[in-house]
Image 1: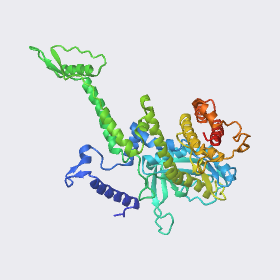
Image 2: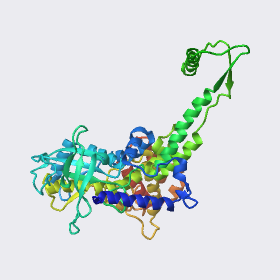
Image 3: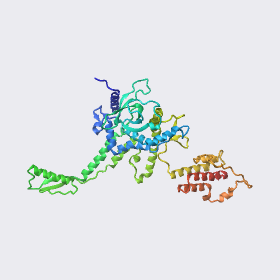
Image 4: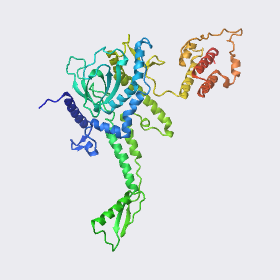
Length: 506
């Protein structure tokens, strides 16, 4: 008998692991005499074909797979040379990603990898028609030598051989794939140097990740039962059964043809929208009242479990009604945080950088002198991907108002360390000394011993509250909210006005 392959051994080990885990998690009870999965109709094992069928046919299942990939790559980052944004590397990358629509392919292979345990992105290389031949380092002359990209899911990218040399840095990783390039053709063997392997949720394996539907699979079964079962129950409840009883003295059909005619009449009555029937000698009696089943409560419980297991907030998963917009807005911001974490912990290190590094290794992209950067520099000096959800004008105005209030308190000269004009600008989110602008110097005192234009304490006491600098700044914030002034104008005005507050001590 032939020895089992490594892949078969890994599958066997996984089966044992699942069995042990099922017992640990309470899949079975009463010393194995009760199997909850069998009782509730859940499959004991799930194959790739099961995941694929759910993805293609079940609405929420498809959204669970697609949404993380769509939102991760919705606003892709910049990729530039660390020394010069206009360096040859940056220019070659920009040309390649525009020509090959790189971000679209990243999103596609992200989705495909999420259906099963992994996905694969094939790199089409110029001048090499034998895909099973290893690609060589530095063999390409530029980005034009990458001809195409092709994404594959687990079902179309079988791993045929593995690296077995324990001294090789790729020990235990795939060496040769069998890609199904066309449904009507034999699988094509492809060497790993031409493939970017993609797997999310890896634990004790560098090759196999966790399908996005794995943790919610049982709940998806429950959803079918509740939604489909409720729909069927509603259909049956709205059309109650009918018993046909022969009238006294009437003799029913005697021949099989007459019986079949009667059955056909009843069938038409049951399925025909006209709902009319003529039967001689029978009296129909309705069984039970017409009812409509409401599955809402059960649906919410199941969807809540799905949202928790998938990490997608419920309102994001389903969409939100108009009356729930405030809560939905918070959910979308929470989801934006999840996507930002996914971008930094998975999409960039596990997908984008391996792709760029492979292109550099092949020679399709020039080697940057000091590496390359991913993302834009934010106000904290950190490189990040573009935010999925930007703050609204009202939210930004509220923040500016809070900052202005803080500045007013910190500008009091009675404090041990009152803040400077530059620090005021920084609190408002701008540079301390704007380019092309002169830094305002403290005014000289007048003969009366106070800065020009600043009222004396007696004059300030007579001034109405509506005219105080803090009130003027608040009015400026309202003008910003209304769109009458922009953020730069608001910041400049606030700095000048609050600087006046600091000088006057009011």
